[in-house]
Length: 459
Image (tube, rainbow, N blue to C red; front, side, top):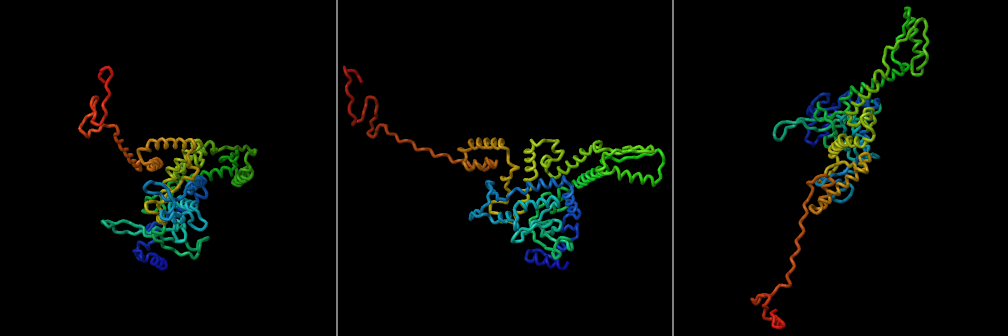
């Protein structure tokens, strides 16, 4: 404990945090001042991930699509994505850090690690070590918080740091590793599903379906045992005469050796001494094994937020066909992936220098699974072109394009009216400067007289 106190003191010196308070030193699970991962949750979820095909398939589908996104900056005004520094035009330093988080690492590997930790432990921790980003194993991290006084009165709890404490004398890990206390501003904590029993800790989506995972594993174990016993249910062998205990044991042993196991299935049974075989169990078909197991799979898939048709579960394929795959992917992206991408960007934003007037955002334009069909894209472009034709002329062209592409009509800027051309100067009007009026019989003094009409007729 003395070493841990020294580490805390060095870490928090000059940061306005008192390392000697009980809020920092208490590490017992259940204290309101610290929130570790539930002790039994992570090992169990890891076992489910390694041993249950439904859980593995759901996590794999989430991981594959989530890791396809890339990072960009999003302008808060017109919502366009950009990845260059507005000042010098070079690639932004923050994006370089996310694109190469550690030596040889990529954005996809960073996102894959984050969502895998969130799926199994409910939390992901990324530490900015200065020269690279470091993924902290979530079950070795404890969130440390303290109660502070609000400026307007009252109190609230605030995260002051993270205690990273690898286990000692555990096979496969550094025996010399020491605990670290990291300040809140150097660790990105991502917990998209809040734990209702904690202030800052997240919850794995596997938590409410742990019993369903156990039931699915039990069904798989039952199927294995069923096949080990000659692919048949329990049997009762009856004899007309009473057998001794030695005879009963001998019959049981000889039956298992000759007819037990999958390799001995479908062999012909020959009985003597009036013996009779009676089935006392149900076959897999009689107990609707596939239906019962599919019901449990469906509950697991529902909790994961992955449509069943995406991972090929029986319930998903019974409810729809692969002709509905595009609609299922859109639901998967809109209700599961996009909220995850958005919250991940919010948590990582503290580790990168975000340009003024922008926010860290995700870019999905290169994800093939989320592209619309050719016909639907053409229809969308046609509708947008028709909308632009109606808007251009009344509004500024650039604002009309931004409004149509983003769907935000607030970006429309009214076009300035064209100036009215000047009126033409009159060139055939009479000169009335001498006070004389021009009519059919009069002219000014300078105009020549009209000729006389012939035959004395009046002109």
